[in-house]
Structure formats: structure tokens, C-alpha cells
Length: 230
Image (tube, rainbow, N blue to C red; front, side, top):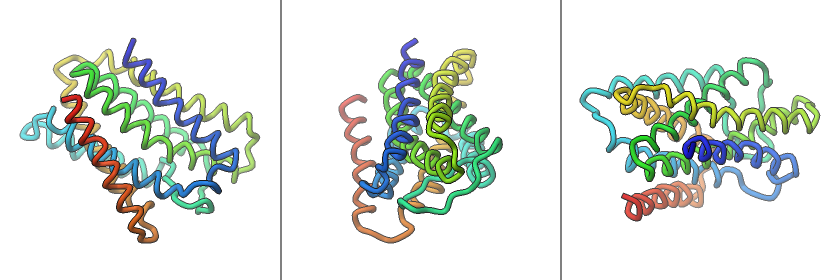
């Protein structure tokens, strides 16, 4: 039950980030700094929390598979992070929605698997998911707004997207214990791609030392978390 609750909390940030954007929040903040911090969080969570829990000798192919899978999803299906108040948006449709769903279910499953191995690992993965879903929720709202969707419809979609996290956590309960480490390797590959292949390039569209500082701050945060909760 606890992993599903944490997954629900993580999913709520899709809705909160989208609502903040619809309230005009993108004009009040610099999204690229949020994206940069999220990239640092994801990378550090992967390097310091997830990778030490897997066997790279046997699970390296699954690590690569997670990276390649999310590379393909991001290029053909998923909604990209957007680091500017005005950014290029594409049409939201069934394919984009499916990409979001697969991403959210995987994240929810990762939270549950992390808790199954060690509570502090589950919490670390939850934090990583929260921070990388904030840019996704903001960008999702922008795309739907550009498509002239009504506000109730946009908020409903964001809320339903958030509910996919606890669904993923519940589905992870059916994964045999012997496969959990391998699923963790797949999730590590996904996190590395999302951070290095999606978030970082968007944050660095225009070079800025503040962006670099935000990335390093995100990495430092999860390293400190590791020291406090080994």
C-alpha cells in the first residue's frame, strides 16, 4: 500500500504542474532551471541509488534496453520537456497520450520495486519521478492549451495521467522477486535517457551557468540523500 501511496503523490505533480502552467506560471519562472535541476536529480538517483543495486555484468543488456526503449518513445510518442515560456509544441493525440501512459506506469512500477528492495531506495526513486514529472506536466498543459482544449478537459487528462503512477505500482506487485533487480536495470536505463537525452538538451538550448549550477545542485541533493539514508 505504501508504494502505491508514494506513486499517487508523485503522480499528483503532473496535475499540480499543469495547473500552475495554466495559471500563467510559466511567465513567472524560468522552466529551464527546473528542467536542469530535474536532470541532476535523475542522474544522481541513478548513479548513487539505483545502479549500486543491480548486477551490471548480467543486467547491462536491460540497462541498454531501458535507454533504447525510452529513446524511441521520446522520439516518436512522448511529450518533450519545454524550457521556454513560448516553445514549439506538437499536436497531442492518441500516440502522445500512449507515450505518457507508458512512461507513467513505468515510473510507478519503479517506485514500487524500489520500496520492495529498500524503503530509502523507493523514496529516492519517488523524488526522481516527482522532479522529472514537473516539466512533463507543464509541457502537457502547454500542448493542450495550444490545441484549444477546455480547462476542465485539460485538468481531467492530467489527473488521469497522475493515476497511472499508482496503477504502475500495483502492477509491479505481480513481478516475481527474482525479476525485480532486472526491472530496476531497465528503469535505470530509462532514467539515464530521460535526463541526458531529453531534459539536459532542453535546459541547455541557450548556455547559462545558472543551468549548469542547477544540474549540479540536483546531483548534490540526491548524493546528500544517499549519505543521510544509505
